[in-house]
Length: 174
Image (cartoon, rainbow, N blue to C red; front, side, top):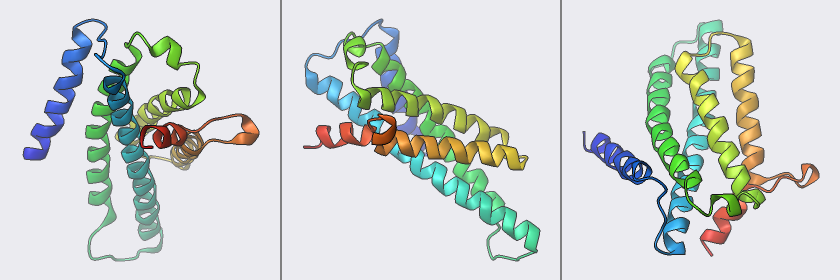
């Protein structure tokens, strides 16, 4: 229950900022802190999506091979999906607040910032697939492809000219 309250408080904090209009942080620390929060949420969701994909593969394998495990993977998948949904609500609120900042237009010039926003958007699409359930091989492949794309957005790809948001992470933590 306490975890749920904390999640709701974080969401309310961002919602309160969003409903005021266009929030302007008093200093660059406010902007950095919001970017820091968004980076962490993307990082958490990327990890959770990797765990979800592994659990889904294990579940399919046990179904196909008839393997009996002490704790079935399906309830774990459901719990992972629920956690992802909770974190996704916080990411949506953080990203919504971030793009409403007056400095958003200037920040869009930075490849690392664009990668972060694309990751937040792609994570929303991936979370939609997770919430609907993986019903086919095509669903799984689409989710896996989205995961691979988000990993590229995280770490970057010099050959494709993509700066990863991990670089922004490093700048904020120097």
